[in-house]
Image (cartoon, rainbow, N blue to C red):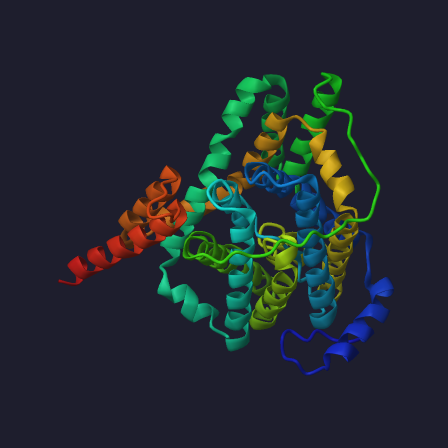
Length: 410
């Protein structure tokens, strides 16, 4: 059996992949398989509704939305399968939930062609950063509390959206909320999945769920030509890059290190960047390391034997790829669900991320004022000089921080 490589590069790629692939059936355990399936369920049903909302705001056609699902699901699958087999560790792929949330507001003021251009720019910069090993230097340019405040501001409206949904469909949404917090109380591994399932059951019983228009067919990627503008690059491209680095790769790699692995940071970023670049024209908003679900496949609950946990990453990759192949069918399922339920599950799924990002943003007194300014500007959703609130939030936070730091030094 091939031993863990932990980013050393001692074993050639093809040899490592082939060796671990042959060992996969023997190493796979029931607990690892369950962990991999849970990762897919949380990723798709927890954050999939956010993609649906963004597509509706951007007036994407059904074919374009299906292409978006195909590229992010297939990209996440290939990321997890390749890196987990290459490095023999549970490297789980995902699409950036905060980036999808950013697009809910971004596509209201930018065309899909401009968004695709931002995807390309973000993917190229991501690949360069990983290849040159610049992650720490890039993160040092913008204080982390400011970036976390921008993230909190972007996600804030999703949390708020739970309560208008509660007014529209009180029985369904209240059931989901109660189920979610019961799951949090008893530390279920996937409370958002249980919440989604409970909401779906109640919707069916009340006759609120539509008859699903499921078409079992292969996904058909749709090409969209990019339109490069300064506004889209500043408002979408740069925030997409920063959100991916700070809220996906950085915490995802930290989770691996915390479970005793030597996370292959640069290799992971390059892999995500290249997959994002290849699929950007087909509406992929980006592929990266999982953050929220990374711990599910990395701990002892997935597999007591540390050297066999890579199988959870492979299983999750296979699950994502399978769903991606049937992107149109997947989209048809979401189309049968009441809109308030989709809005509620998006808010509940993002609630831990909202709490964590705002906590990190405001916990350090030295950065508190700058982070608060960033948070308020981002939540305000202003658009000045054709540049969106996330961009101005970053600018405002950095300026305030420099003023406060300068004053403190004097």
